[in-house]
Length: 82
Image (cartoon, rainbow, N blue to C red):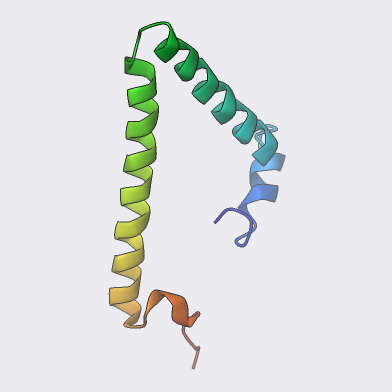
């Protein structure tokens, strides 16, 4: 969703927070949580999975709200302007 709306460039320009930095930090967080899981501490990986589930639920809910407001199925493209 960041790339089609031009947010990647804006994030890269703002304080150096580019997409590569976000992806690398997310990968490091998952790797660290997995290492904690292997060491016997399950809480960090549960937090990561909880964040993934929360973001997925927010995405589905906003998609449903959008399709209800526009009254078009999600896969049918953008609404036509007048």
